[in-house]
Each structure stands twice: as C-alpha cells, then as structure tokens.
Image (cartoon, rainbow, N blue to C red; front, side, top):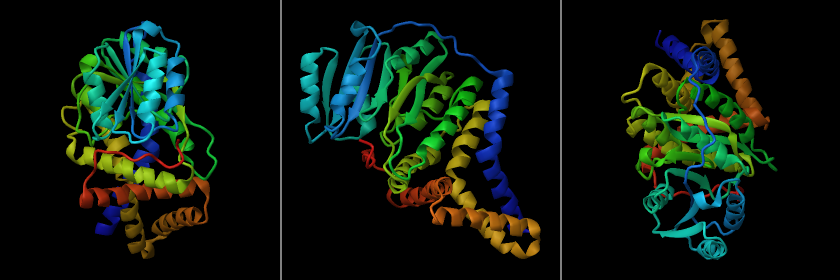
Length: 367
C-alpha cells in the first residue's frame, strides 16, 4: 500500500510540474490575464554589471551597452568589480576615460549580490538595470525593459533571453524556449516566479538587499509579490549569451545554481503571505521542479517494488529505464533532462553538507 501511494504521488507531482501546470497556467492567463500598462518613457537608469575577472569579455560588454538606443544623458553604466585580479579594472577605467557614462566601482571580494548592492548604494537613478559581463543586449532592450515601469504596480521586469548556437552537446537552448513560454503565462497571471540574470531591472524604491547567497533571479520576484508588487516578463527586451560548451559543463553549472535554489526554498520563506494564484505558481514551477530529482528516485523505487503487481507498474518502469538508456547512449534531450534532474539531487546533498558560498564561479566556455 505504501509503495502504491508513493508511486501515485511521485508520478502525479512530476506530471503536474513538467506537463500539466504549464498548460493550466497558459489557460488561466488567457482567461484572466492582467496586462501591463506600458508607455515609452525614458527614466534615468543606472545599469549595473557585476564582474569578477572578466577581462576576456568586459570590453565587448561595455561596447554593446554604450550602443544602446537610449538617451546618453539618462544612462549611467557601473561595473562593480568584485576584487578582480586580472585586467578587468584596467579595461573598465580605459572605457570610462573615453565615455563619461562608464564608471568603475571596486568592491572587496564578496560575491555577485554584494557587488550589486554596493553599486545600488552608489547610485541615485530611478531605475536599476542589471546584466552579466558575458551577455549582449539588443539595441532596444533597455527601452523595451523600462517601458513596463509606466505601470505603477510593476516593481521588477526581466527580459527575453536566448543562447548562441552551441558548439558541443548542450541543449540548454531548448529548455529556455520552454521557460520563456511559461514565463509569458505567469507574467500575464500577475507575476513570474523567477527572473533572468543577463537582463532585468528593478524600480529603485522597490529594491531589496537579499542574502548574498540567494541571488536576484529567484529571490527578487517572490519578494516583490510578498510586498504587493508585480514582477513581470518583457519578451521583446532581448539578451543573449554563449551556453556552456557541453552538457558536462552545464551539469556542473546547474549543480552550483541549484545549491542556491535549495537555500532559498528551504530558508527563504518563499510561501509567506502569497495569494492563491501565485502560491500555485511557486509550488508548481519552483518547489516541485527543484524536487523533481527526488520525485524520480521515489517513482523508480516504487515502480521496482510494484513491478509484479500489474501492467501499469511494468510499463512505468519500462518507460523510466528507456529514458535512462537513451541518456546513457547520448540522446541529446534525454541526456540533458536526466543530468539536469540529477543535478537537483546532487545540489541538495551538497547544500546540506557544505552550505552555499556567496561568491560565484564562471561557467566554462561561456566567455
């Protein structure tokens, strides 16, 4: 009896988070969507680039930002250098000498969020935009991003994002196309459950200093909602970056990322003070998604225990073994799904054993 309960619960939870919930969210968004009242305003913006040893990409990043279609007198670009030990600071200072919109802020080593907090404290503009040192923005991205702040309910906006063509075995681009579709639905419902690190903006009056180990991508959207504000998605504000060079690098990046996610899920009080719709979003898209590795292990164990009890359990076990076999022989999507799902388990173990550092490591091949 216990095995059957575990089988049904784990299978139902996986089916809900991976398949059913995205379609339910899309249907609800169509029936009861909340459009954002956009207007082509041009508020003053401080655009913050957190950087640690980014000499290989920082010049290209600054060139791209200086070419944005936005009034020069209303844009300040701050590179918050997190104790860079290479030529990052030198290159930023050279760029600042050529263009007064660029400013270098040297920070003691404290991690990405600590550097971002220092940059925010050193600026005074109405809108704070954030990007990564290895990303690129389309020329109209900032204009598209900030027009959402014409709606007084909006506190946070993230843009669309894609990966350049991968040279290796990474399938991260496929995942992000699905995520963009789901974010559109959640944004239309009221607020998204997670942001996008290469391109997002926050109204200064709504900015929150979070635990440096948390990161903005997962923490800021739900914190905005807990304060009665909206966190929305603007697909026309487009950024892109190189993916990890292969699935092995992406797996290691996911393990590091999920360690921070588990910290927020277990200690971030994500479910406090949420309305029913956003609570459904958070549990379905975040909690159950991060628990997918554990759910798969439970489902596999229950299927093995029940294999002699009927065709349903035999078929379920056969399907799981088929996916694992496809991953083992290198079928792209299957291998990506299995490794990323397994990363949720490994990251939980690592978090429980070692905790989570505030500093971050660059993903191999993304520069």
